Length: 211
Image (cartoon, rainbow, N blue to C red; front, top):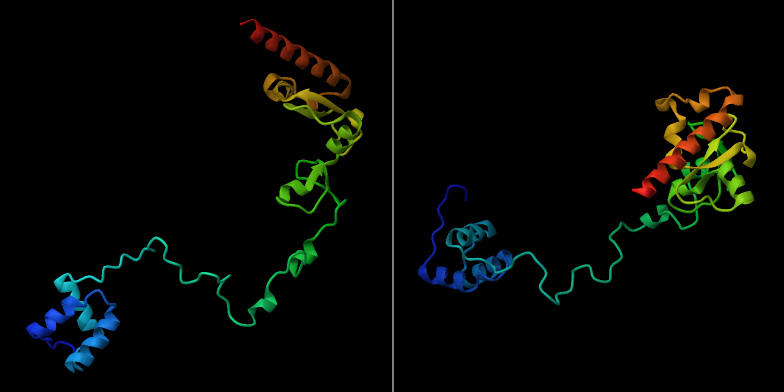
């Protein structure tokens, strides 16, 4: 009863302290049965043990060698919910509508033509630049630290001869920062700009080698 003080005899307190290692529900059930204290609830027992500092001895952690309660279970789910589970290799719903078959081509926001080459993960590796595919078909793998530079300004022109393999370190020398603006320059001046950038890069690398 709320507001009613619960009193215990010395014998009752001694028994509760002796059996405090039980769970509070077990302790309450045995206590009521032994002492016929129907006026005592589980919460009363909990409060008494808390005030007296009588602990169950449990830490909430698994003991070494103690099996987990869900050992051998693959998951908890409602019966019948497996009907809506995704099945390996099966596309459903939006995935079916958005799927693009291998060989599909698209234009990126930067204006490059890409082709889907597989359905593997991660997603970004499913697509590869078409100009890079064609260049490598003719010349072999792109050397490490190098990139392909479009020569005529038309990124959709994927012909291998329209792409120059250059060190990535040269790319900054072809933008507006160095006053070159390769992509905006007249087509007839671009070979000279590229050759100058290559020469400056070679001179810089040679100078670094002599230090």
